[in-house]
Structures are given as structure tokens and as C-alpha cells.
Picture (cartoon, rainbow, N blue to C red):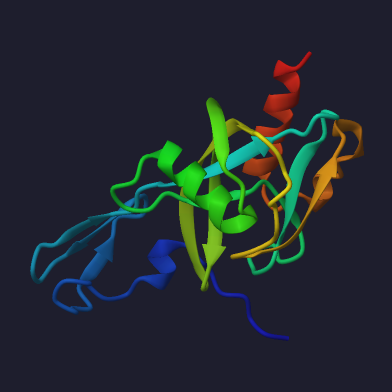
Length: 179
């Protein structure tokens, strides 16, 4: 059996990204400091977006992840916010890239923290949920990093199949606002 290694930054990052020194010391919480060149590096949360899109029947659009983490699991469409991009710009870009849909209107819902493990490294994210409206779904098709999509009624959602706690919490928060 293969030994599972920690994905935490303090266990993965070993060298200073500025000078390459092995004197890159993790403080045990959220930063590293190089004893050689004095470079100070902080582990901060990355921003990610998730779109809650509802059809005329009141069903939520869920996607299937094409890649790990969570390959094959259900997710909300969305992704990481690129450098120098607003969260709203990221929602529009991600939904166009993944589903070929144009967002007509969006409203911020809620955010939740997440630990996204990619390439053996924990990336901490703040997942921002938006309620989005589209004019129609006629041009919708799967692209980018999703393998499929489905419209699901609230009572039919299997939260064990949702890719992360943050996405499950965004969905639950959305449904609570509909009461």
C-alpha cells in the first residue's frame, strides 16, 4: 500500500522560491521565511467562484467534474479567479468556458472556505457563490474541465456526491433563501 503523504504547505514546500535555499522555514500556521535571503511568503486563500443557475422548473444546474480532485462528482459550474480579474468577471468567463452560457444577471449569495488538493498540494480557497440567470440553455454544451451536466430538484440532490463541503454549503444556503 502506498504511503499517503501530507498535502499541507509546511510538508510540501521545502525550498525558498526566491533563492532556492533549504533554509525556508514554515512558522507552523501560514507563512514561510527564508533565513538566507529573508524572503517572507504567506499562505493565503485563493478566490474561486461557483454559479447557482436555475431553470424554469426550479431545478439547479449541476456539473460533473472531469478531473481530480473529485473526478466524476457533482459540482456547481465555476472555477478560480484569475489574477487581476474580479469575481464577477470570473463567473462570466468560467460559465462561458465550461457550458457556453452567457450570464444575464448575477447576485452574490454567500462564501465558504475550502481546501482544494491539487498535485499533492493543499490550496486553500474562499469559494464565492453567485445566483446567476441565463436567457436560455439552447447553446449549452460541455467544455473545459467538466464531463457532463444535469438539472436536479432540491430534494433529489445527493450531498454525498457533491465534490466539496463548500459547494454543498453554497447549495444549502441557496435553498434556505428560497423558503
